[in-house]
Image (cartoon, rainbow, N blue to C red; front, side):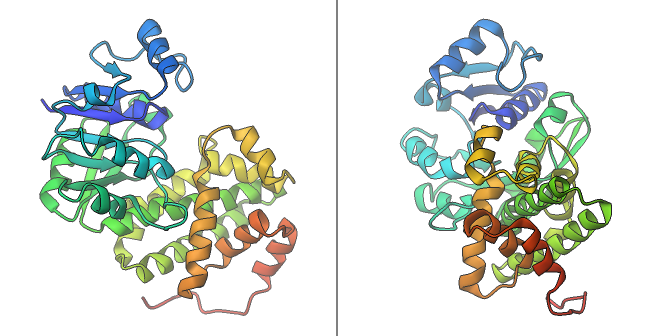
Length: 333
């Protein structure tokens, strides 16, 4: 049995905490907001995210980072990608010396473009790091539906340790050593899922969505390889797998946000309507700007960027994509 601290009691942090309890671990779910902590203690439920689900009696809760981290051999970062740096700064003096840091958010930091692995090297350089990603809706994990994930770490034994901790009869975890590839797959698929939502909002059909998804994975791979990732990673769970699940489900807030844009909503209206972090919007800005600086061609991403941040009309962007210079399909990476 491992003492594990999950930081972040959103839908995904809660679902993973429940999975770890199912596996017999001693799990503390840290809740930053005191109101949420007290509400969960009194009701046994995370009412905002899973109002109909009673959480396991063995799951512990804490509103104190010091208390939650005490003795924890594994620390799961289940905050938004934009909160990773602050969270690591807050825990660096509290976390056990040899604790493994596991990031489960999907995105790059605004301003720096850094993935969580890079931030961890800056702030927690002596701690082993792993990223856990793949096609996974928290709502389905809470129902114990079969789910496959991938864990990546520069040290294979660390990835295998996390694989063992999370795997059970409904959660199958594979391992990979391509950390940057797994991180980028999780970040870029949110952009393409947003684009699929725009397609839905415009009233287009399956032909269009298939085109966006297929050319989207080409963009993800192109950018990933430019950043040093392996082509094979994007053919797996963190690439094609995560893209499929995010593009095809209404559980995806990125897709739902895109639908609103396709229907003519302005960016501020979309964010107010969704009322949760839409990682695809942040990723579009970060990766759109990085791609321009690095000279990487990402036509779908750039058109979404133009719509969100430069005032372009959605239908004009569709015309621009369809009217691009003719290309060969197969690329050599």
